[in-house]
Amino acid sequence: MSAYEVIVAGGGVSGSIAAIASARAGARTLIIESGGFMGGTLTSAGVGPMMTFHAGHKQAIQGIIDELIQRLQAIGKSPGHIPDATNYTYSVTPFDAEAMKYELDLMLQESGGNVLYHTMLAGAKVEQRRIHSLILCNKSGLSEMQADVFVDATGDGDLATWSGVPFQKGRESDEMSQPMTLKMKMRNVNITAVKEYIKAHREEFPRMNLDISVMDSASRLSVIGFERQFQQAKERGEISIPREDILFFETNNPGEVIMNTTRILGKDSTNAYSLSEAEIEGRKQCRELELFMKKYIPGFEQSIVVSTGPSIGVRGSRQIQGVYTLTAQDILQMKKFNDVIAHSGYPIDIHSPDGEGTATDQLEWGGMYGIPYRSLITNEIDNLIVVGRCLSATFEAQAAVRTTPTVGAIGQAGGTAAALAAQHHIPVQQVNIQQLQQMLQQQKAYLEV
Image (tube, one colour):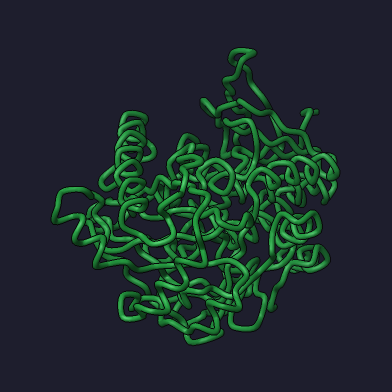
């Protein structure tokens, strides 16, 4: 008998929630994570806030990922779900990244799951449609680990790919992925001064669909704009970032913001050399941005850079070709699935792989789509479930489901399904969908079935 029934590869948002869900469902669960903490892009790439848990007034994403936010709220480390001051989506959820690391540790420990930090996936052994074991690399050297069911939460679909699952990388036409972004966190920002400038120069913020009452009622600020200043800096040679405007969000800590503005084009997160080049380019762009913000943007005169990254943020790379491929049409038409395991109201949000520009396909107000279990499983491997942004979806559909609340909901479903498959000794393709959906609802996940 294997020491573990379920092994989750990758401790990002989706993987950490998958491991907690699997352990809570009674499976002996291990999660392996290359860093020293869980939370993925939210804790290791500076991503924030989370957006969005809502579809109109309805909270479409609940369950374990929302429990995490409630726990952070209880200790003063998140204001919870608040209005999006840019009016791009329904709500945003700021948080304190250090507290999130701590709470995820606690939640996994309380569930009975185990974790191996500083451990990388180095390979997989596959026999007769099943992953037999993983090859792991850490400070103890190379080791082999067996389990009954495996969950690929690597973000790039590493485990699935190395197990022989076919995939599509990036845009179907040319395999170009959305640009990467290295986030920069700045503190000592005068938020009042920023708001006063916006109110006095509404015409400079066309993408905010500005409703001053929303901006004033939101307990943390979200801003997209300053196009004129950014363009002028480009013309002077001070900015090389291939983006048209500035985007930043206030964190749980007043006066601290996350800059989501750098744009690194043409890099591949599945190639070690390319990924290293992206990190270097990202820091170059962050340095330009720091000087620009302090010199030209009201409220940032005395700001201080707290951190970049520390790792670059990747929007997309490989998409597995699973039993069902989610499409943009499915999302925009809000197609109903009998095997729905998660919902989301976030739009199709494509940062151009070619340079400037961000394309958005919005649903009708309050619109909500479903994500089917079949997009998490493959035709080739009987004991593999794929969660997170590398699930089976087209380039356009992935641009909607890639955000952190959504992948958290997907992770809960994947982890629960993995536990069911392990406990019933069945292929993941034979998991009883009604039983899975009932278990998710019992775990307070939101499902319309």
